[in-house]
Length: 310
Image 1 (cartoon, rainbow, N blue to C red):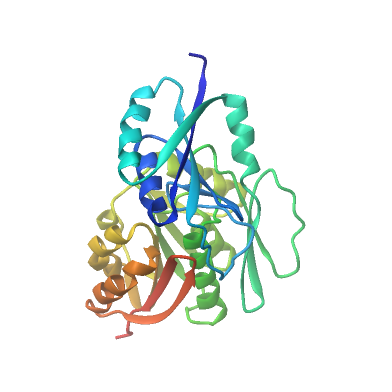
Image 2: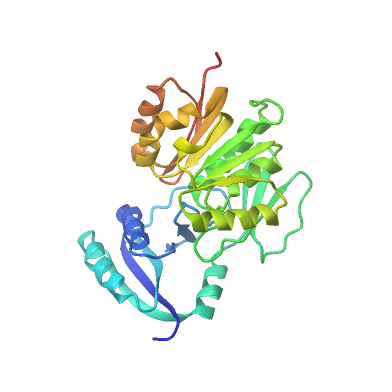
């Protein structure tokens, strides 16, 4: 078969879309694009989906359509994922895309997004979109490559909003430091540097993600220290720690995350479904952190904790 991609279009009930997305990604798809009746967004490996604006409304569409992609010739993975999707009420159909078709389809789904808080804003855009920066606006260029998004998923946007609130509220010392756990394309760390952070460290177990993050740091003329090491291998303590990963991993890493926060510092947790919020709050307050504030968008929650000063 010629070089290209198998495009999978899966449809099923909205309440199991996250599990369906996980199954498609686990099968080898570098990303999943979500379609609903009202909007189109892209859901990627590090929770980096796209929407045009931060919104507080709920999407109540009961049926979802997900698009995923496998390399041509990987029919074995396709055959394995089909029955797994069927068990949770999802069906799929496939078509073939040439490499050139894939590139154009992927780009069309990625648009600039703006995150606002109290009169301040951060705009994240793919490199092929030309925008003029408004006064006081922070503009971030992101080249997602073929495997990663550009910052528009609710979980990422709430992290950006949390950073804006912390920084603009004067809650950190001058020239603070940030540790971004599961950095993906590096959006959070890059935003932090543009907001005045003097030290920004990003970690990700995916080496492809780190390669993309390095490129994006260069595009934005920001200095990041990037590492593939496990959190336990990252030295030092930070004024702000951000972790936009799955809730189960947040719980598993709770003490390691706490160990990386300076007294008086903050921890941003995202990648949490609203049904998981209570358990995450309990896990992190049990180790001595204090809930500072939270943001909600659709079914997602971002929690921000403060570490008491000694």
